[in-house]
Amino acid sequence: MFSSKSVTVGFLITLTLVSGFALLYYDFASSGDQTTHSWPMYSYNLQRTGSTEGPVVNVSQLLWKYKTGAQVTSSPAVVNGVVYFGSWDNNFYAVDAKNGDLMWQFKTGGSVTSSPAIVNDRIYIGSLDSKMYCLDIRTGKVVWSFKTNDSVYSSPAVVDGTVYFSSNDDYVYALNAQNGSLIWQYKICDYPSEGTMVYAPSVVDGTVYFGSLDYTVYALNAKNGDLIWQYKTGGWIQANAAVADGKVFIGSNDSYVYALDAQNGSLIWKYKTGGSVSASAEFASGVVYVGSGDFYVYALNATTGEVMSTYKTGNTICCSSAVANGNVYMGSDDGYLYALGNNETPISSSYGFYAIVGICLIGIAAVAACLNWRQYLHRSK
Image 1: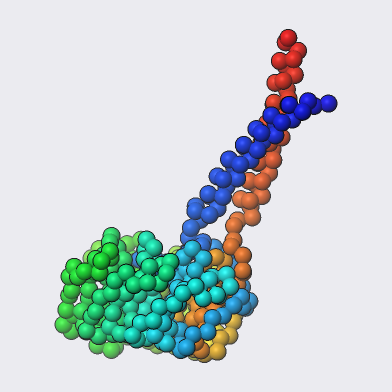
Image 2: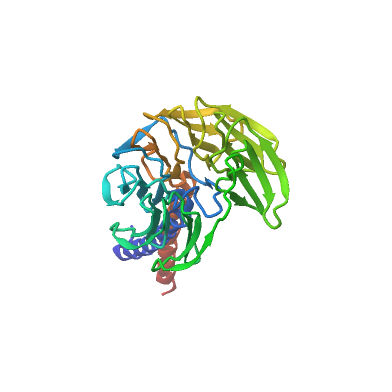
């Protein structure tokens, strides 16, 4: 029989090892895979790649929907279990990502079509009341606001303590992210004509990818602007591209979602929806998620373009989705923000299985070693 003292020592050793490895595993699963659990700005990052990792989402499963007072065309951001988005009802919302409960809302003086950028517990968001706002992420209180001379549709980019955005007053602005003071402003003298207007570019591996109202997808050398390739679609392109897995995914007003070879622009596949595709495509773990003017959210196989799942909302979808927490979050012109997919935060089952097995084996070995050592000491006396 084992002595009570030896069992106690073995238990303490095992408990220490189990606790240590559990903490290491938790740290790896929660912070080491941050891309799975957050989507902090429009098209995920400053490069506008629209690409992250995470489990495949079945978008046909509605988790919850949150009703606002008007259309939702502001692409959501998701950080620390909260979804942030604006509405044409002049409000900016923060709702719980798990159940859609309202946490707080902030009322501006105009519609909020801008998509938020979240950096260091601050939310940066524009409004058609001509202002750029900085809000406290916990309370929604105004930290500062900056007044331009016209509506702010632009989704801000925050880099190295500076907020960059444009206004319909024909200026591009750079503001101090801490206090909102003006650093510089630049007057755009001649806007491009309607036929050549360019939407938000994606920058990946030294190449700039973007679509235009001239029906064309372009790839340019990021260093010198030289044309690498171009691809002609059948309609206006009002969304930016998702770039991942060696492909460029982009929608067009001709109702198609295109997958092009990122190196040479050749067509890999195209999928026809029932309406214009002005929402940006987003990519996660081999799946392309995109909304259409036919009211549907689509999950498409990124390799083949085949439909994996769909969900029909109550109106046109113009905003892009956020892919986080194993779910897809997307607004619609029916005034709702939708959460689709799996309601549980995903953690890799393979890592969890091996971690548990390893901890058990180490615990057993620790107890055995303790008992053998005590027997050795007993015999040597």
